[in-house]
Length: 396
Ligand SMILES: [Zn+2]
Image (tube, rainbow, N blue to C red):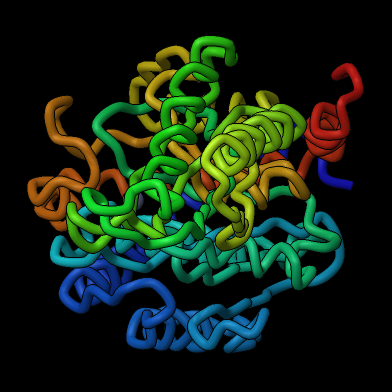
């Protein structure tokens, strides 16, 4: 068993590895940025990342979980098994405006650096190539396929306009609702019609009333996708698409039932037939593991970076990282690469993702993740603390 005295040299070793790998990491990040690919179409990115991993001795499996652009790459053996999540999809029209070129490359760099110490300590470095973060949620399929079974911790770092080690994410379920009524002349014979648009509008306003009685973390929002063909025809078909979000799954289930209730009531009020279809797979809320986030923060600060942690429940979205966090202790710290007024999904953020600041952040992220891996690999008590918090037991 490795003792505490051995941790610092191992941390220095992984930092030196990242320094040595810097030209290769920069070239990889620039390649991904110059070749933006949309969700599930990230063939060049997956090929580039797996090629680098193979050159460095990782055992690569391409096309896991039925996703052609997903992959796993393994080095070392035994436990702990630590997963580095690589994202690499881009946004329509905006390229890498979410900085996934940096996420993928930082996780690559961390894993390559950790491999260099796996001859000194037991354990496995697992890189999981995760397609389609922006649309579809590739990690949901990866979790369902069991890729994370036997994994002790997972990490990735997201570029941001602020450095924070914990940020929650909302669970999310999508539904489509369709109402089927009866067309009729809106002036000459309205009494013959059954108005599907009225049903959508009643459902929409019902949800508006519901919102006043929901928890502050809940979000229910939607659009009307079909509202009729012409003003002089009673619409016989109308449809809407809604998202229901909350910070815990049980509450999200309850809200979903109440939203369904609003639409069923609207169907009854109008005489329409209603069809409600959950669309896509649930995004799960992010389950924080503060013990793991603190390790990362300590390592990041030791590299000279300042953490500016805000409230963990502010400005929340949803991510498929949440699904991973429900099955493995997971961190997704945010690392500042842009001024505060430039946020992700802006054109200017795509520029930040290829800037010196972006690449500085990527290298810092690789180092801090590799150092956090050292903590978990070399100190069993540290890993136990993380596992205990994840399982909901008091930390010791
Ligand atoms: Zn994004």
